[in-house]
Image (cartoon, rainbow, N blue to C red; front, side, top):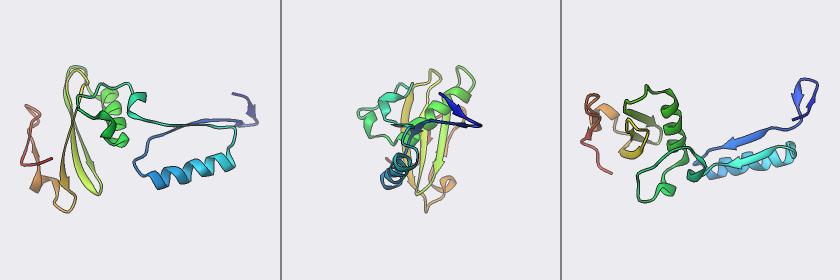
Length: 130
């Protein structure tokens, strides 16, 4: 990468979004204002993550990127639970081996403690339905 002063002449943008209109708007802006930049719209197969689901391509890329991050941050050999609160509440589980197991969903209008419980000891969930 060449530089002009303190500013690089190009950048690679790694985009992970489930909001297609917003991603499209960002990509269009980048193409108009940063034509030399490389744009990569991430998909499931781009990530260093093993997903144990029938259709891993149907899992939101935001949740998969969260799992990649938790695999970098968690203590080796320990499971992890990822709680994401947005328009829905998702609780994704990652095995001690780093395997992504998927999630249970709850309506965001029903707060997590009232709708879902997770046992930190055995990393199981209950009271939520897919």
